[in-house]
Length: 250
Image 1 (cartoon, rainbow, N blue to C red):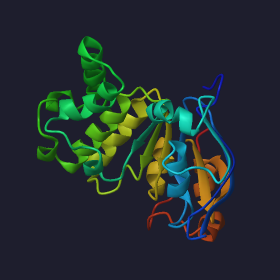
Image 2 (image 1 turned 30 degrees about the horizontal axis):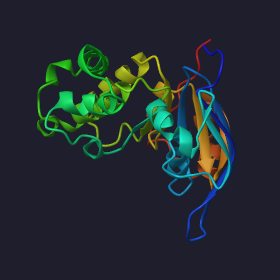
Image 3 (image 1 turned 180 degrees about the vertical axis):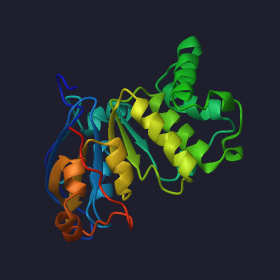
């Protein structure tokens, strides 16, 4: 279900690193509000470079990015970084306070929230990821899967427009992987998920983008893209051994 202004609109985005390496060659993509989209592609395809542009860590050499209609520019970065919630691959890059409560409160407190509203944000975010019972525990006492869920909560507490997840299933045991999938399915927020885990993309995202050599090489229903063995092989993507894309219903 989509309406109004897209959550993300990228137009003709090109970027070269200072050493001259061209990483993006003119990326165009639109993600509507409420969509869950997987960003697939081999290492070196430009996925991380693209994601680092979405909240202004990198600045476009050419092209434009809008988040819910707001252009990414130096003068909008504070609001853009609230709207684009990045969840890193390693939760320990995101969790650094003595307790879970303080970690989740850190971002909203930086926006000036205090008192009852700050408490509400923290409680709501932890409840959405099933970690409210850990609110007063030190993050480093939690399992890896629990820390990843708390890292998601730190971003949800900012009430973002779009949640960007970098390899969310990596290093998770099967139960944690399933729990995180259920949480992500339940969130009423736009999701862009960078992943090499093709079955996870199929489970969570109706739409996928394949990046290759700095461009969007394919954009379509995840089921169709993953069923195209020739397309996957051309972009150095592989389904796990023995995994068959199930026939679509109806």
